[in-house]
Image (cartoon, rainbow, N blue to C red; front, side, top):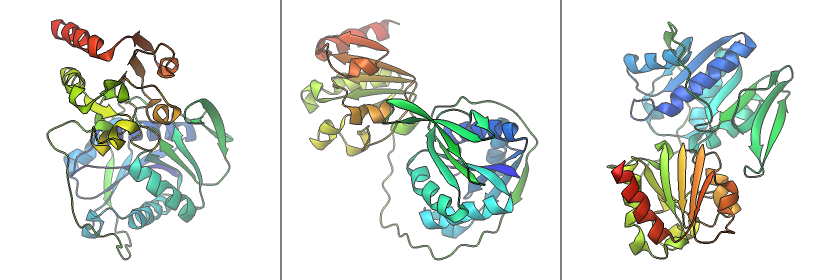
Length: 318
């Protein structure tokens, strides 16, 4: 019996997200009085793999096959299922991101497992197995009981703290059976020279209240001063003011930074669904009745074009 956690790597390196997942899985394993097994797919050096043991992994299983250099959801789900069965995993933990959203349902079918997506806390009980998660686009919370023998949990990003719990983890190679890879990659375009939105701990986001794409310089300057990333609401990306990859919301990127600064964003429920996991939300809007203020921890009622320069000036002085 074990708790299996799938840890993504980016060109052979783990990021905070992977360590967050292992920290969470390790605590679930403690509740079940069992061990934590971390699964890594791809070419990752041993010293990098050992970093997973710093956050509670008792064993690290490595699947390294050239066929898996291309992300094929069907193949990856099959590999995770095989490792899960070998390790007799009763709980499988995956990130609630684009990859996790694609893998978890497939895995649920393969393992005949109950699935709870976007959980934000440790299970409130293991008998019965009860998890805590947001529902209705973050407007409410629910306790979900999973009755299946195997449970799959997808963890919302930045919802669980990193917990260092160093162990002497063993590293094992696993020869998974891989079928036909149906995904074909025709082109790869990588974002370089700037912080990825999903990795940023601080995000400065603009909406239609910025009035024009020519007014985005203060947004970019503020994000740069804070070592953060820039984002936007859907109308802004639809208008072509900003790149599509900056669109946050229910139909865009789901993010959970420590600080989210919304400038000129009204706060439609579709947008809030993508940023409600933020630790702190600061809203700047000239409409005191804008819905964004209901979700914000701090609010400034005023013209963004007057507030931003003053905010930037204050940060430079600090």
